[in-house]
Image (tube, rainbow, N blue to C red):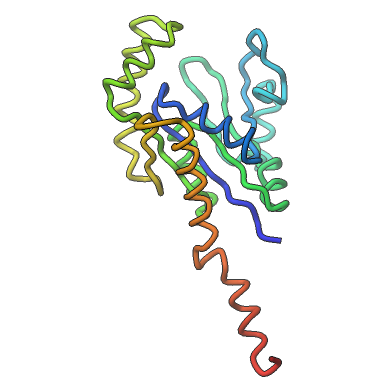
Length: 208
């Protein structure tokens, strides 16, 4: 059985990456990684579904035991966010593709630890469109929106570190999902992912 593919999706807040990831999970059987955090659950959030809500002690032990694929400590809040390894390893070994939707810093950590990970950076068709989306949510103050726009420009400067760039919002969300599926299909044909099969064919020399 072939291993599944690990996708890491990042992009500015408001670019629609969460919607794309959700559709891939619901309609195309992609597994989705659940992050761990030391913050308290918000109303409507369920442990193990939205996040693994851990104590600082549990999170620090996971780091010390090498259980985290990536993690970040946000100095302003003192909260940890990160990705446990175990679930990802299980899904990949079962042959199922899995997606992580994480910040740029975490994506860079994963690329160092798992070079085979496929990094996808999702962007809006324009920064004007991004601003319109953030305003259209109607959930954030003007100051928060400005902070998100500023952060988006910082993230864009690291887009060159990713394997693929997808523009979300040029047409339909379904087209963006199709682009992700096209990437998955192409990645399965990479030479590095098929060397075992080639070696099996070579081993048949003289036995055919």
